[in-house]
Length: 80
Image 1 (tube, helix red, strand yellow):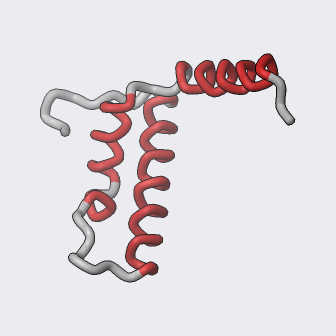
Image 2: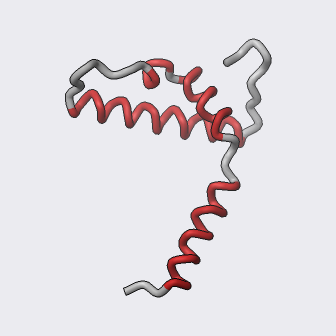
């Protein structure tokens, strides 16, 4: 059984790691520019494969967007 102090440490670590990430709205905007198909709505009754593909594409687009922002890429006024 986990004691309360260990549980609060885990929460603190998760919050700290989130603070170092670029702004969520900016990541989402850039990810949508990088892979617009990942953000299209799924069909009415999607197959498991379609759901899996979209989840993977969204994750990959977000990772690439975060990396680009950390490397210094910035959106200009005409983008997004």
